[in-house]
Image (cartoon, rainbow, N blue to C red; front, side, top):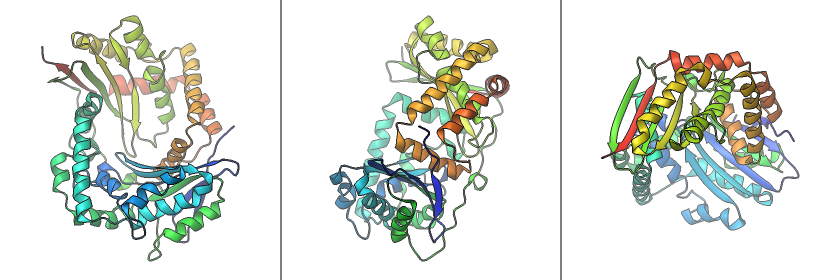
Length: 418
């Protein structure tokens, strides 16, 4: 069954709602998505958006902290949030009968959050513990350092959780001012999938939305951001770290989420190192050579640029061999791009992954919300499949040549002390 896309409606203040009406669905999924992320933290301070994510759960004018945390959970629902480089997302899932409760709760948290100085200091300490946890995770800390290699001093290189010293210098009033004067002024969209009619969802949001000013939502915000400058030359960095395994990442800049060839690039990376055992890198380095347990290829597009990366881990004695073999694959078109037969299979693999992902309704819903904020047209599943079928192999070959051989790349290798 083809799912979506949702219909778009607006509240009386101009706020956009994307609603997927499903009268026979016994669950409800919803999310508020704001076009602010860690790249937008400055000049307030590194980590302020993620800090705000935590503070949204600390109470409102109508609900205390316990009520915010327990109201939906007591009805069998789930409430959570996350921050990315460019977005803050507050989301919920629940039995469909509690849709209005979930909408009221998210709207209350979004527009009417309040917190004490004591709660703010407590969350600073919690986030500091979270930063420490990520430092102990080699994959996460490697990615963070690799992003700094790819984006340099640009805000996209900043960790989502923030730099610890800057986080601990934040003051309660600074975060409150950021919430009121920056966050709530940025483009935002609500996405909903469930049995409520679009007008019911609209009415629920209007009950919680401030009435004092007209909300103007701009669909595409990339032009308002400071785009990073291009990489001038390739660069490699080796470091000794206190881990039992060696870890590495090779990659560079990639096109943005609005690039016309983004589906071809996604197809290339799914074939090269997607989440399936027959991916090219896995076959070459795991199955043939037994040099790694796991190796992937990832494409991360942002509003005005993007990043591609190949992360891997291996025995410390093998990390040079792995690096050499990965670079040999990238430098040879016969290895880094699919043959005509492989290309047909690659399309079927990607289509299958998309169809399997339909089971995750919340993830699909958030994807539509992000596409709206990116200024891209909302596509249903069949439209996406049709686009994949229409991708010419020459476009994938050109993308591989451009990314792997024509542009500078970065390499970061961590090995342990002898």
